[in-house]
Image 1 (cartoon, helix red, strand yellow):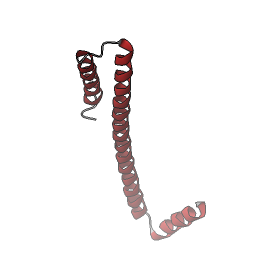
Image 2: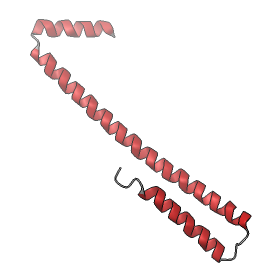
Image 3: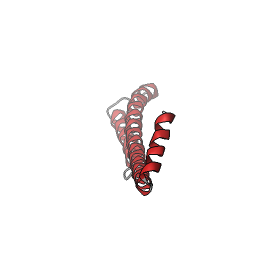
Image 4: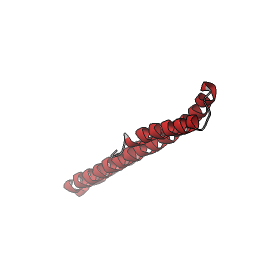
Length: 98
């Protein structure tokens, strides 16, 4: 996760800029500022959280695939070391376990 802190930090900066622009354009009542800023930060937080969640999930999926590929290679190497009778016995037991 190379740019992890960038997303939330950028979201906070954007929320602060939006709040400042709204304030400078004449909306000075606290309830109005809170309503608009709250809606904006809620949306920004949801989007940033979604993007980070997708990123974490894809990293986990890649690791799972790497681990699976390694296990398949190790199984193939182990089976290659067995003689034909033992390989057939392992396959028969695996089929029975299904």
